[in-house]
Image (cartoon, rainbow, N blue to C red; front, side, top):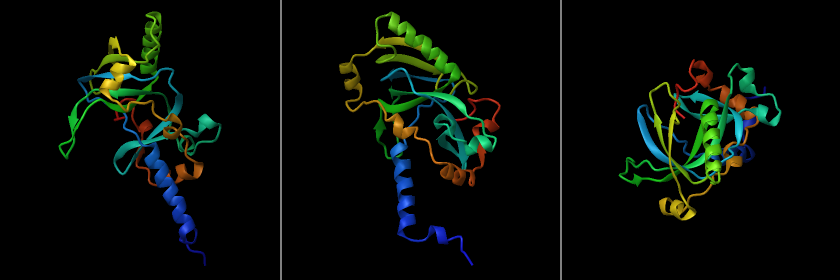
Length: 218
C-alpha cells in the first residue's frame, strides 16, 4: 500500500525543499507601507514600472504573502480558479527615509524598499512622471516626494504626493551608498501551478475577501 510519505522521502526531495526555501529568501524584500494619518519622504530610483496581476494571501494570520498571477505568463492560475481575483500592481524601487529602531536597538533609515502600487496610484504616478519629464527630468528617477496616507481606507502606499526635489546620483549615494534598483525578475517570478496548489492547501483567506482593495497591509 502506497504511503503519502513515498513522494517525500530521501535527499532528492530535500534538495527540492531546500531550493524552494532559497527561492523564497532570494525573492523576499521589504515592501513600503504607511500607517493611517502618517507620512514620510521617499525617493524613486527608477520609473516605467513592471506592471503585473498579483494575488495577496493570508496564511497563518500573515498577509505578507504575494504571488504573481500565472496569467502573466499565459498559464491557468489555480488562485484565479479558486475564486481569488488578482489586482493590477506596478512596482518601483524607492528609498524610504523613515527612521525606526528595531527590537535590538538598531536604528534604520534610508532603506531601499519595494514600492508596490495599485491602479489608482499608478495613474497618479504616471501623471507625476509626465510632469517631471516636462521639467527636463528623467521621469520619476531621483524624485523625492512627501507621501501621506489620509486614513485607513486610503492606499497603504499613500494617497497624497507632494514633489519636493530631484536628487542627483551623488545625493542618492549620500542617503544610501548601496542603493540599487531591485531585481524584479527574482521578486516577481511566478510560482509553478503545483507550488500554488500547495499554498492553497494552507490558505486562510485572500485579499479578495475584502470590499476595499486597500484594507490590508502591503
